[in-house]
Every structure is written in structure tokens, then in C-alpha cells.
Image (cartoon, rainbow, N blue to C red; front, side, top):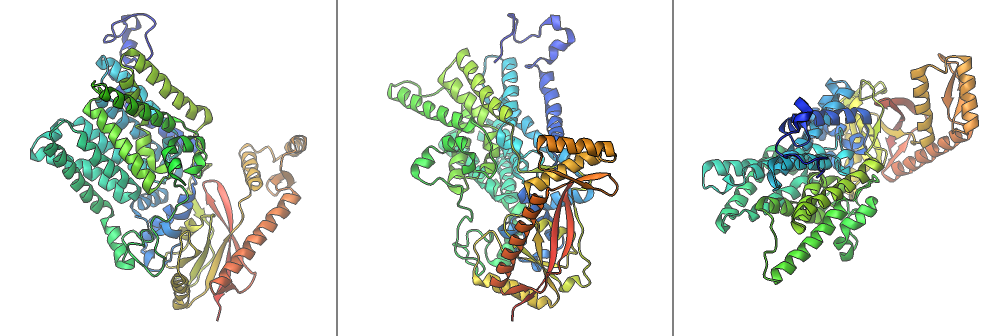
Length: 620
């Protein structure tokens, strides 16, 4: 770590600093302040990012919470695609927060909550590091926790509704409890068994809330096998943790698995239909195979590949190098350990706590690679990656040199993220209300059916703005379906016996978004309310050749708008999309009855969308 400019006792602050010397980077007071300040800073960062607008939110997080509270599973058919049938507990909380509280307050609260990962990683690092002095360890743990908080994956999910950062807290808390009570776990006592059950239950709850966390349940049990106790002790700890996982999984997700079994005879519907057949979907395992390595060589080099090409594991281009560095360090460490063992020397100086963290990450990574290979799902491992990297380098290069090199390597990895920024999964500017929309007047909701086209637009959040008794179905969900699915869709429309409509979302156009942002700025500043302001705006637009036009306004003298050519292009794109939807309707035995569609607006934060509500009918 950083050295003092002059030699001082590392256990005593420089008296020349007076009372401020007691809050240096390695002091207990600095650590205490960081525990409170850092989560608040992440809350402020969430405010800076703006309203969460990720595709998962638009496609199913809001819908799932609303649907669970209004028992829409009984009348709807996959409005959110395959994700309609994911455990809705976290989504219920998200829906209630946005329904009851101002959206900026929700974002800030989620940011603070996610910032608690820093506190937990700090505690984990303090348990794991074996440095020269307690003060130096305190300081190193603080910097490592900050590096964990500045990993790209973690930053990309701050304040959003996806649940990866939220459930990672439970996994990290389980790791922290394991390390804090590492020695006590070996005791043959009810207290030790209760602790192991609690540790497992935390990971089980995380898995029940979001099944992608099951990889950590396996990794946690595997990590317990490196406990310094005898074989019986290790197996007892692992077994108790495993039983806790089952209890936690049943507590947080059991009710939903039972519901899916009752309706579809598949607790994980629509996934794993190869094990639990259902007539609505063909036999499949994991539904999304896009992200997996394409060959054995790919798999062996995967951390290097996805560090260079993040699109291999994510829709969002995220720049990070921590995984490549950690993987390279692990390869060198294994080679060194083997060489030392062959030379009849001690292979490693790792403590059992350090070995636990390394095994937890290694097993978790392998399970992730084989099961999901989606970048978002490694949050709980990635925030621990700087700690694991420090441990490996320090073990390979004992002494001050190893610690210094490890620090600089971690600093480099953090600088890569900070310098390139951490792209997120989508945010827009705040409004007091996070989500709202104009909706058509519906005289008989119990008999009315809305049809969503499916695809990439993510329109199911609009369902939450309609009366709960209106049924919604999706034409082409993001999962393979059988002909029985289409029959079920038409049965819903026919059995309700009332009017049916298709929802058409307008094409999102980057230049239209430029117009919206420019007009929002104009509305805030009011500079288009005068002739002078409009004249200046025209000169700027023409001089810089911006993709904007100025047209007469009502309250303002003028308003920003699309250029004529861009407007024609957008109209053509919308017409093409409508034509495509019409063809899809006919392929499913439906058709539009007229072109007399109602046009309505919706808002996510201050970002507006346009959608149409068009009457359709069943083909005879």
C-alpha cells in the first residue's frame, strides 16, 4: 500500500496532524465513517444516473409485481415472455416502491441498499487478509472494498430493479458470516449447526428470489470443504450449510415453485421443460444459449475473451479487466504451487480463510460458465475479485513487494473501469412518478383482451396502467412455443367474448430522442419562449448541422422537432412495423379490423413513448 512520506510507527497516527490523525486511511474511525458514507455516495450515484429504464424492467419486473398483486396469472398469457413466470417477490417490492414513493427517492434508496456491498466486502477482507499489522490490514481492506465497489458489473446495476446487486448482498453476507465464525463452525454444538444453517439459508433465500444465485449455494458448500478441521467436520459443516440452502430456497421461492407446478407441472416453467414436459413449450433446458462459449478453447480462455469482447456475455458493452487479471494470476499460482510441491516444498502459504474465498470464486465461476454465462450473474464474485487477486499475488510474492504489486494491479483494473465509465442497462431523466401512461376508456374490462406483439420493445409495463381485469397475451414470446400456445391464446380471446386490441409501440429513433432531450432542456431554461431565443437556436442548429428542426409552438415561440426527412423515415419505420405485426396477427389467426387506432402516450421518468391501441378480431 501507499507508504508514509516519513517513517512513523504504523500503529500510531502522526501527532502533528492533531485530532485529524485519528481518521487516516488505516484508522478505525476512517473505517467507521466509510461504512456510513460510501453507501450514501452510491445512493447519490443512483440519483445521478436517473430513472431506471432497463429492458427487463419494461418487459417484466413491473408487470410481474403488478400481476402477482392482482392475480393476473389466472387470466394472462406471457405478457413478459418467459420471464412472466419468474419468482415475483422482488418485483412486488419494486412495484410497491414505485407506486407509493417518489421515483427519485426509490432510486436513492436502492443505491444506498446496493452500497451496503462495500460494507460487507470490507468485513470479508478484514477476515481474510493476513498482513503485517492490524492498522495496515485495516487500510488494505478499505482499499480492496472500494475496488470491489468500483467493479464494472456492480456499478452497472446500482439503483436498478434487476435484482442482481440486491440478492448479491445475501450471498456476500453468507460469506462474511462464514469467515467471521470460521473457527466456531468446527464445534460439535447446536450453536455451530444453527450458524451453518443460517449461512446456507441466506444463500438459499437469494436463490429462491433469483434462481441464478444457485451457483453460489454450490460454491459456498464447496468452500466449506477447505475448513482446517478433519474430514468429518468438513462434511458436517457442508451438509448443514446445504440443508440451510434448501430451507432458504423453500422459504423464498417454494410458494412460487408450487404454483408453477400446480399450473404447468413444471416448477421452473418454461425452462427445463425437457425434464418437466408441458404442451405449451417444446422440450428445452436453459432457454437462452447465446452467451455460452462456442468451443472447448473458448471455455478455457473465456475470461480473456469476454474481457476483450464483453458482448459475448452481455448486451451492454462493459469494459473491465479484473477477470482476465484474476484468471492469469490463478494460472500462475497453480503452476507455482505444483512446481513447489514437486520440489518437496510447501505449495502455498494460504490460510484456510483465504482458500475458502478462492474456492468459492473458482467453483462459482465454473458453475456460472456451465449454467448461464451471463455477465450480470457474477456480481457476488466480481466484487470479491480484487480481494482474490490480492491474495494470489501476495502468496506468490511474499513480503512487501507482493503487496505493492497486488495493489498496483488492482488499481489498474479499477482505473480501467473508472476511465471508460461503467455503462448501465438504461436510465432516463427523473420525474416524480416513475411510470405512468394514458390509457383508452374500457367499458367492460372483464371481457376485454389486449395483445402484445412481443419482440424487443418491452411493452408489458403498460399492462400495469390498465384495469387489472383486462387480460393480456403475447403473440411471439421470447421462448420457443408449440401450436398449443397459439390455441391457448385464441381461447382466451374467445372465452372472454369481448373486444380485443393489439398494442403497437412506435419505433424508438435516436434522432427522436435527441429532439426530446433538446426540448426538455428548452422547457427547463425557457429560452424558446422569446423570438430572440428561437433565432439563436436556429443559428446554432444550422451552424452545427444538428439533427433538429424548429417549428412554431403554442406556449413557446418555437419548439424542437424532427427534420422533414427524419420524420418521413420514422413514419416509414412505424408503417413497416405495423405491417409486420399485422402479418404476425394473421399467422396466429387474428387480424386488424380497421386502421382506426387510438394513439396514447406513456412516460418512464421524463422519457415519453407513443403506443397505439388497435381493434382486432379472430379469423373464422
